[in-house]
Image 1 (cartoon, rainbow, N blue to C red):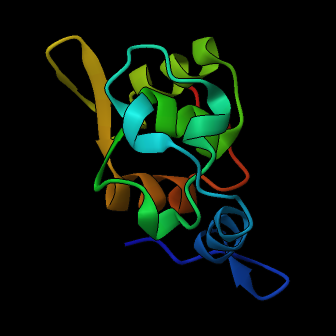
Image 2: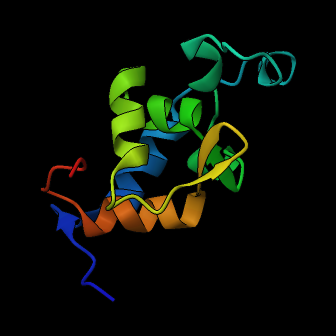
Image 3: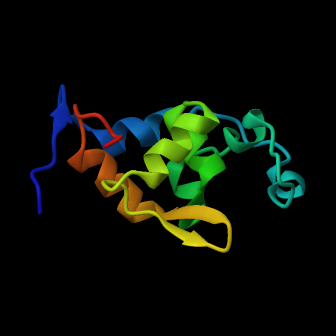
Length: 110
């Protein structure tokens, strides 16, 4: 396993958790089932722990604050531990966190 990298004493996971804690929860349950969820609804998770155990593309998009196209580039990258369920690309939350840690200061796209 690779060494956990830090920025001024904080791990990437600590930074992501801190950012996610400042975001307000909104009416996410109503929007979860819709195909196109407004970005603000996805960003309404209060903490990273509140995200589901299996992240969908819209969650990754919100976490990384990138475009939909870039999100799919990341999820389709050989580096990313994502997989397909039906037509949806998903990634386990724990695997995604480790992927971010392992690829800190690197391009996430092959």
